[in-house]
Length: 355
Image (cartoon, rainbow, N blue to C red; front, side, top):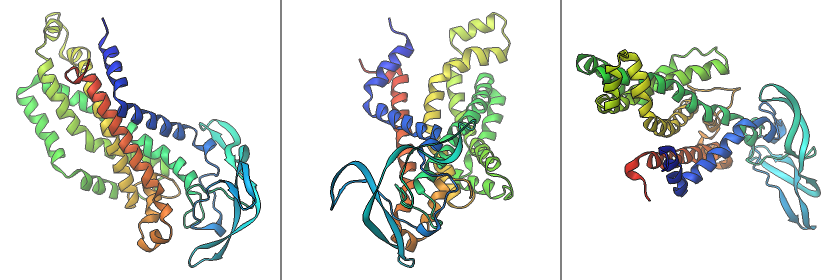
């Protein structure tokens, strides 16, 4: 006899797209954790002579023949207006792994200067090109993933407890309490979410640090999201409160708070997991949109949204299309979360299980 968790895991393993989404998320969070080590340059590194530099892709052959080691060429700016670079093919600069570079603190604790890869100067390795200041886009995408990939988790960590408790109380007591609490929640739900997000973000102080602004935006996202989640919880609690084990807990003399917290809300866990997984992409898009319009994370901090601001000018984008690479990461992350969330929903819902 399999437990519900074992049945859910078996169903999830059969959901190929969910497994692909989960694998992509695992890779993205690996990039988040080891960003300093994986990035060839620091967040603030800038090569002023290589602004708007196109991507440099390591190659394995040239006119001299095939090479067993990936290599790049050094480049020199020849036309700043058209952003043209002259490539010096007379010398190969080989890609080296586990090289010493700019110092950093791994996990914010352990000092190190080891980077996964790099090339010898004067050559550079810009996998996704550079921005207007000559900063490596790939390194900044890795650093920016920390904000973009974590803000959804933190917002959900705030939204879920508030929504569960609020919706649990409304559904459990019903009647006038339920009516008042749900009407208050519906007032918040009635506001267009994105415009409310813009309005609240616009009143944030401009002189706060990156970390403070990140947490303020997280709270705003959580404030907007808890009301809709509480309605879902309330609907589930309305059906659960009449179950025999809940009636038995009441008969045993447990107070209402313990009945709600210990016997009702734990049975909403499958809904919570699915809603959290599917809600994180919304937070990622919300933060990215705010940062793109200048109301979210700002320089010198990096997030996928504020990296995209460099691509907001059409003439610049035509000459430097690689500035859209951060948007590709946003798309991949959102699709991966949705695929994984769909698989979790199917796995946790007994009506959708197969076999």
